[in-house]
Length: 294
Ligand SMILES: Nc1nc2c(c(=O)[nH]1)N[C@@H](CN(C=O)c1ccc(C(=O)N[C@@H](CCC(=O)O)C(=O)O)cc1)CN2
Image (cartoon, rainbow, N blue to C red):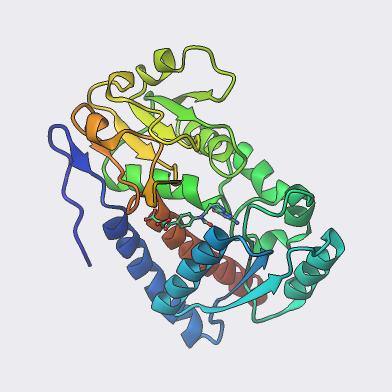
């Protein structure tokens, strides 16, 4: 298992792969325990259409399942699949004893309503934490199954010894996948949270205040060095293809000289997200086993 060095001074690269290995190692122990009790976790993923990025992310998730001992399968629905076909697939997976987690890969083709599909997943199998019941619990301060990227960022902050209480946290991007649930998780830990988005005026005036800055805007290189507070912890959630390369939303070369620590792209938040998905799939299986035990 790789060790993550403690923070000292500025310019630390947060090694998402090393952190993910730690989460996976912890998860594997739990999965082995569940398997020994006859309840090996199973993850079912659903992809609709033929988005190559989605296919790649789902492949990455299945490889992680193999590493930690989670049984996994994928259902690939055709590009033209309607909402009824998706709902029927989800209902079938909801019923299955050997499926502890269900994940509908996003984005869906434009004409389909992701909220309707997410709401059909059994909340106890909702390993992405997007079901309205799980989102509601998160807002109310009870973190059961929660969205994986925000959870990965919180986990990394804890692992790095950063206490969010009283900290200025700024999130750029207000999506349901990252910005909104992360804001709730940070509020649950008593940070002062600002959420910026495409309509925010003078973005830099907000980002310069941030002791913890999370950028999930989908705009390559949006955050420049002069937009970052010295000593900040910066998490780059962006994954953008530019000229055949994968780059984030943060100008890494500039920000690394200002911040205490920055996640790279690739090799930062992405691997963490996947490792948390493994942990949540184990959690769903543990919850089910507890229910059975009464
Ligand atoms: N149902 C969901 N859909 C989507 C989610 C999600 O959490 N649940 N998040 C994103 C995509 N995503 C997970 O699905 C994801 C993105 C990136 C990575 C990753 O490991 N990326 C690598 C780089 C790979 C590359 O070169 O592009 C890295 O950052 O090192 C994993 C998962 C949208 N959809």
